[in-house]
Image (cartoon, rainbow, N blue to C red):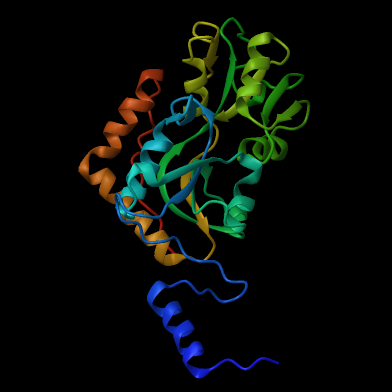
Length: 282
């Protein structure tokens, strides 16, 4: 066995202290402290296919989730150029957080007790409700109680799919895709009868140029969906920083400005529960 001289060991220890470069085996580093315009980056999960909320357009990203994410990241010390956006499909969100592939997720991520077993949440920063999207000339679907015998599409891993399975599965032909955009495309093509997810998401699709005048939101929400910021389980310190940033965004008026700019064009009217109060971090 090779012996290391004392001065070599001391130098290595000093490097760990001054550069914060050494991490205990098996541990995960916390979100690095950003410095706007400085070094470092933060990876944030969003949806890439939800108009008005999280949409990738060319090399850019638009939507309410994106605006809230950028605001929170700025409060954490990161410039917009230091944000790396990563696509976070519904079924992969917990895995992405647990594996350290993302530090935060803003992706119409409903806070639920089941998800809290694996991740923690900041927020909520928006409250929506599950609804139905149908073709504009269809008068047969008026709510979840009218879905018997209908082909209904939702996304694997979403609370929407689970709600339908738990409460309305009898007589409903539930088709699950990996993205809502695939569901909406099939609805417009006439291969299924309805798409279900949150009303604000559906309104964004209905307002897209290719679907204008062809699709409509039924307008009878049958759940309460509280959008939270997903983060590593048990990181109460980061959760509190996120909540402080969201609270500041709301009190400053920037939350409303972002909502008007992104969701407003769809004509969607948020419920009176908005803007919501943030939960206590644990």
